[in-house]
Length: 255
Image (cartoon, rainbow, N blue to C red; front, side, top):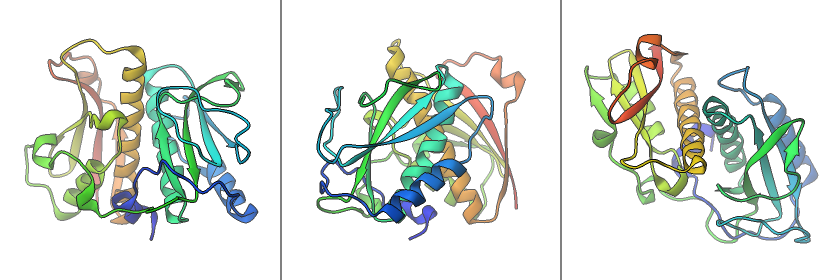
């Protein structure tokens, strides 16, 4: 299974075998952390592997999972930084999935050091060998159909359709699936759906983190199909206020 395939087969794992991973495998994960790509070089994101084989620390927060390891995500405190962190973190999660390691985003969970190099801990990701089923069929995922997520201005090509299917599979906090797309034959305008009522800061930050995860899926899928993509922010759309969504970016594709 490669990283693209893992998009469709990964499931959140909440029960783990409390046994150590091989040193060589942990070293590969650390190398992946060092080489992860980001959306925005101006927004810092850092990761730390926190070992908890002896359960010496308890996860704090609403959503918890006992795991032998946690990946702590640190980032700056602004919407672009949260998207940047989600984009980078999902690469690591999908990489671990290809190595038969289970993972789960614990959105409100906290463990270990609260800060690292001036960055605040944002969330943690549990990981380790799964106790039970690691993968799932794509049909088991509860996701909205593309028809509900996309407004089509042109008929997209086959590769762009597959890229949108990968975006649709993105995990999100409370399965909120906040992404919306306006689709042309060679580009996609990406929006984050607005909720009817004001959202607490934590939920808003998580929604931006989720948008980063989704953009990661688009990047991986574009690479799988040898599609060149450019992500830009168009000022005429960024300045405009929209009733039902917030403009995030425009993605331009070239085969």
